[in-house]
Length: 247
Image (cartoon, rainbow, N blue to C red; front, side, top):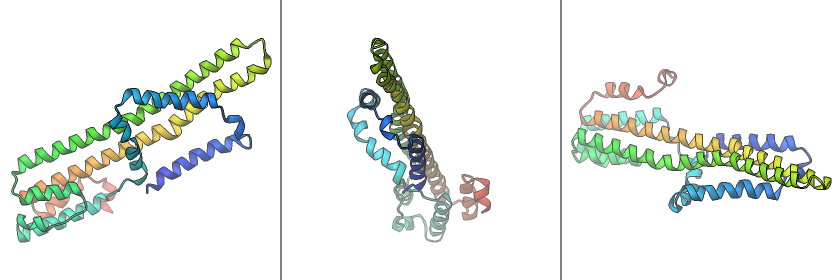
């Protein structure tokens, strides 16, 4: 589990609830809730097809349970594989089993004797398609972050209309004003404390996954072309920050 995501949501929720104090009931409005969340869901269905929406839960799950493979450990693994290839030949890679599916597929291509140039093109295209698939989910959550404040403003306008239409009845001015303000508050909280941060985290994870795959491509091509193991390690370490290289 990504503990950082949980900590962030808990802190954000704790701050909001703390500011409400003992008067949490005052901050609930059914009308504001329906306008913001109903509008948010409705606009999402308009923007995306059903297959994309069905994947929303799986996409969100990655923000909490995404697997994080350490780049330094991946480089060590590539170095070990390079040593195997240099000692026993490329055919020996057929017996190498790894958990990373992308790496396993690349090793299979390598042991099958696929031309390095063709293999690089195939693997690079696979990375591009993966990035496209990720972008759909990221855009979905980003669009929710844009829609939440917008529908919060819609709720505010509805509340203002109700208030202005009942100026002759002072008892109805307060509730209408409360609905107007709460709708804006709901939209701002949903967008800035939940949806947009999750979209940014998913974008970060996508870039991280692409970087790992690119590192694998560079490593496997280096192994197939007979690049010296020490030089291969140095090439792969260029993907690390200077601090991690020196650690």
